[in-house]
Amino acid sequence: MSLSKQELFDRIRRDSWQHTLSVRALSRKYGAHRRLVQEDLASPVPKARKQPARR
Image (cartoon, rainbow, N blue to C red; front, side, top):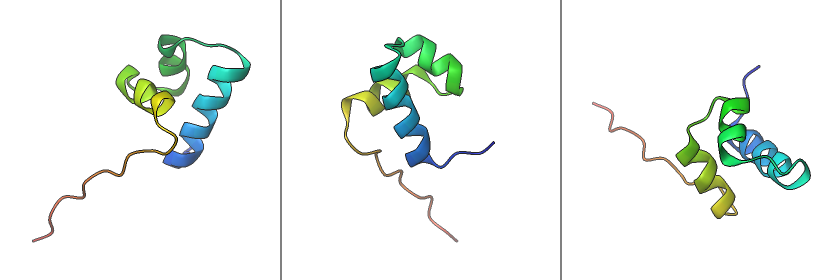
């Protein structure tokens, strides 16, 4: 099951709020780095990643 970044962030926020899961538990559940989970919970929208330059 492949989730888009927005879907992943929505699920992380929902589980954090509804199930009061910790950052560590959320990172284990979704296979995301704890830093990503913390950034998600702190920001209302996901950060845009810089795309590598094409040659």
